[in-house]
Image 1: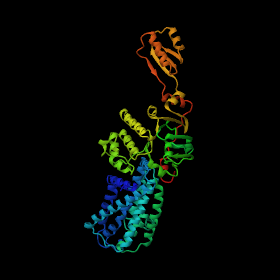
Image 2: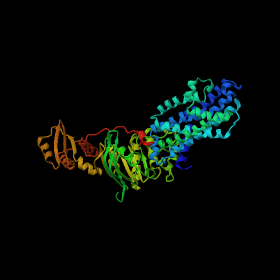
Image 3: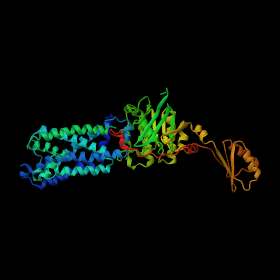
Image 4: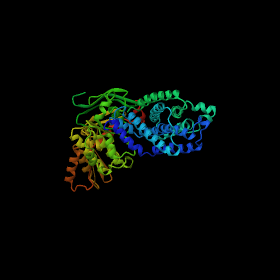
Length: 245
Length: 320
């Protein structure tokens, strides 16, 4: 690949594989927490988990944790660090086309997310098994749309926040409540109504619903899927504009 | 734009908030020239070259660089310009060889030869964060030259380099010049400007104070030479005789030390007088005016203005 985007993707892929934040937060954290939480509630169908096996309920939820870790923590820190240190300025001065960096980050974000999701499923197979997917096309639509939405949110945060440290602080502040309320924490049925109200419209909750419900046969989650699709379109448009070199 | 003009700037103005950093600047760089942009910190040099590269949008003015407007045609212009920017880095974990791959376009010359020439061959597998300040500067220079640019912009080129590395970089710039490449050099190292530049543009407070060849600037603003030597108990007639020599402006004596000020001719006349009078003093010293003196003289008339730190974020993402 000798195009500007190709050269950026190749270099960024190498750098990501050398970045301890990516390796721990995007690859290790979702797997470790899935193993812990997935084993905490047993494997017997449970009414609190819409009558399904709690371990399967979490396996179907944790792909979105990978997506959120990438979008809310890894990418903002990565981009803010580049802006802070003048790396983006160097790319711009070197004649990289205006949209090349935004496109490269989208590709890198999606590739890394896909690999991390695959790894999570590989680890889940021997431990909890992977639940059967009831509605393939909805799950297959929600995952890439969600990944695009969160990668774009990450790129946007990285372009707004002034330094890598502030990006890390803000990213973690958004990630952990989203994670606990919308994907990896307790099921909505055991939450109080106020907490459920707060959790409902969070982007990660919507994405998790759009993946988990059709996967486990709990419902089509059309509203959540539509919201994720809209978020993907808007976040990508804004992020691309903000990240133009 | 004249026939051979590579950079033409007319009435460039750039402000950050309420502070005017570049104020009605005119600049011409002709093909094949090395032009030095010199001045104190905060004179507006870096902002000027960032506008020339299309990295900042001017508030006013007309710019033409290699026939392109850097504001509206930056994407066509930037691949033709090689630049070594002040205060910018590469990703910490990127290796030297990988940086060459990343920045090499279809116009790229042999990166291996450049790396060899700038003494980085042993560091090809080293990550950027492990390079010394001088090695980083040399790598930036390699990247600036990698894609056979028509215009090279070098901002504080030899900052952090040891004397030997500095001479090596100067030699490389001279080779560029011989190959016909146009160079715009931003520096506050005046010996560098004097050694390398065909023309020097002196800036202060966002404006051009004067421009010309280094010799012209020295001639206009620092004409006075100084000859000094020790002469225990010099007779008064001798000092009077020195005062009568051609070109002498002033003779002062502090203890045994005699200092003669005047135009450059005094170097010859005072030297000849000393030879006639007897043994030439061992500690004879001569100060020939240089660009440093010219700049000090120029800036003496214009107070330096500290510019604010530019908002780096404005370079990326819709805030230009």
